[in-house]
Amino acid sequence: YQFKTVRYIANHTEKRQALPEVVLPDHLPQLQSLVERRYQLKSQHLTQSSLGHVLLTGATGFLGAYLIDEMQDDADQITCIVRGHDVNQAKTNLENNLNCYFDTAYVDKLMKHNDIILVDLSDLDHFII
Image 1 (tube, rainbow, N blue to C red):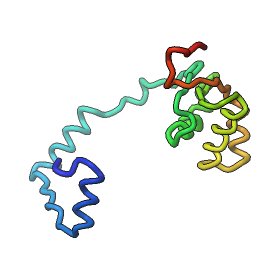
Image 2 (image 1 turned 180 degrees about the vertical axis):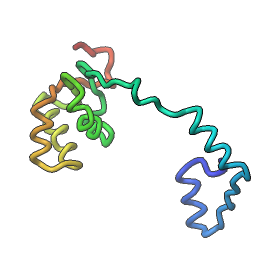
Image 3 (image 1 turned 90 degrees about the vertical axis):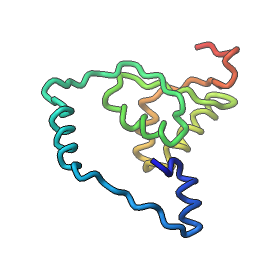
């Protein structure tokens, strides 16, 4: 793969340089068929179980918000590690982040089902739960 980063693609796009044509192999249908036969998920063997108690870092980021949303029904409890001067600020930080992605009523529901631990993981020498 020649253009490995978004920056590299953007630079070529901005310069209006033509990107090289992608040439697909003639035997692509056979390859796709082989992959489908060998790597089918056998859904009858999959069972969903509870995630138990989840400790989540990065809850105030984009991915964290969506992980909280996705795990609501599958986790017994979600404890979010959040930075802040105090627990109230940490709670506000988490709530503000969730409000960026979900409506207020849904954020209220999410906040009721999550615990917050005030921790700054950049200072691991003083990290105690």
